[in-house]
Length: 472
Ligand code: AMP
Ligand code: ZN
Image (cartoon, rainbow, N blue to C red):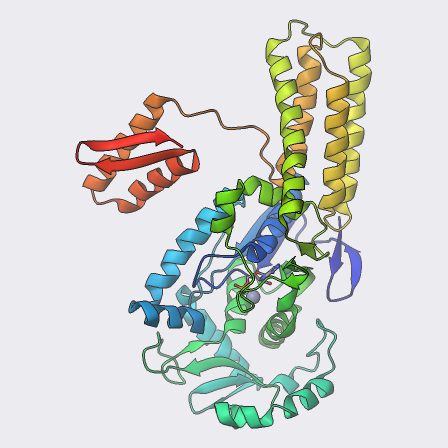
């Protein structure tokens, strides 16, 4: 498989450090609110990368963090008058629900920054010992100029960066950052402020800087060298550049072999972001469209191309997905009903052509995860399926088509097999289980059952006469 590496600006053949294994680290969200559909793009794209590498036989270790200590979380906690952990725990749960609804698999590990503080302190200590970091008044800074390759990912020149920063010198003074040795230095550890969460450290009570988290969590759960590091393109500078500086300076070895960055999801030609206020949360969108459609929409463009979000394009994705699901259901139904067991010679000839579709699908995916072309191959496959099947088709031929369609869709995380409707008895059994979970104060389980039912179109109503339910 070829991957476009942001570092070398070229497509390169993917060669992992350990044969047959792939360690992938994807920067995860800061959990202070519901995620927006822009945030969903890296989740869906890199989940698809993971699925494809797994399909190709790699043993994938997929690590994606939750940044659960951050100014935005603290601000929100102060507004609500609760502990920061209440906010982060709440939104981690919500992000996980959104991920499940988009058929994004749970990571092998979802580390949380607040649970990895001792290792972060260790890395800061190492950096100080090696002369790459220094402390001033309880703040530890990375000495950027001590890392001679700084700027290699974003292709920025350190001297140009320096002059850019000089213009901000006044602002630095105001914010107290003029204590740094150099404008380019960035924070590894910062002292606590009143009302903020903090941890003890050799430099006093405080908390880690954001960039440090990823360097430490990727090292712990993957190793000093990771195969693929990924995230949105806004993270290239300074976040990933700083991660490289910290990790390579501390570990004395290359940090990541391949860097993958998705382009932005836009709305009306502008990037979608919280700060611009032009965003929709996944939750809002899910009221309008099943999230499977959103997944399909995201994959209908190449991940390095900007993608515009509009009702028109989502509607187009909806009809595209419908076409695939309908074709799948047709062959499935025909297979179930068919009386002819074995294939006719003509069907055998057609079945032999199925491997061509698989080969072309793989060629698209091997070309830097070209999901747009891979989807075109699936469209051709369903066209072929529709035109070569009918009432007289054999079971074996219909099953071969069914298997090929679902195999390729599965790599993309697209579900073609519609869930069977829940039977009344199943619903009542789940309601009973929820009642006893509540009695045992297992509210997490009780909520999970309610959410599962809601996801399958069953609304619960708690009344004085007990729980009532209806299909919505
Ligand atoms: P954040 O919580 O802002 O750090 O974002 C989490 C992830 O979403 C990062 O990988 C960002 O690069 C990515 N991201 C944020 N906004 C967008 C967008 N509009 N389109 C694509 N990716 C985005
Ligand atoms: Zn990161």
